[in-house]
Length: 351
Image (cartoon, rainbow, N blue to C red; front, side, top):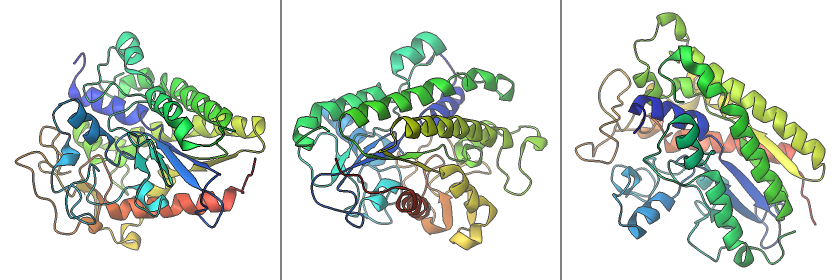
């Protein structure tokens, strides 16, 4: 790697938040008869097994999602998700997630998300930022190409790195590029017939155990005294989300007959940290499946890989599953908030 693991980790968390869900009309009605299929694009927060399929087909090292205790709460065994149970997409799609990208036929959609995927492609990151993604070469563009490859069988008619806070500007320069990539993908999907988009903003990354661990020792003034989260990282998420909202408003004005709904993941998750008891959480900044330090996170001992084969006794009392990904309990709250916003904002569109 051209940079340290902690730098790569932060870069990945700041630029991979491009995941969004496309809901199209055309086959069997779901979601109160309004939406008929879901297509998701993203990284490990949305990956329901693609990275596991890829590793098996290419004879690569199996990802952490292939090992217990991942999957323990709902599936009772590992199923390719970086979580103790279901992801947000599983709650949005009642049959527990859209089909994975390798399936040419579908009932309610296809999930193209791959763990480690970034909005900007790997060649751009390596050439311009000096970052090598050791997790995957998949980018949003690749996922979009997979969607287009499967389109004939899906639809009958397609209608950085930073060393510390002082270098945050290096990452901030990537935000407009990421937002442009998202907007470009939305425009292309509209041309292919998509009519409704649920576009999540970035999470409150300053509260994530992995980044809290990697930037541990920061000046105490950089922490929120109420939550313990790193303020400057959360401010970055807010900056990212503001630019995204501005771009989505432009898209709405340009496509008045298309539903483009913003899902406020940042404020949804911040509610967890401000009022954890309200949501049933007892541990806010510690990982359930993790070890070491005040945040129970060690990047060299990922959840699932030996010897880390165990987790906390009650995952639903934790916000974070493995220090990077959320528990099923968190995902359910996030999905409910996104669904409510979708139903409040979107209208049925028929072409």
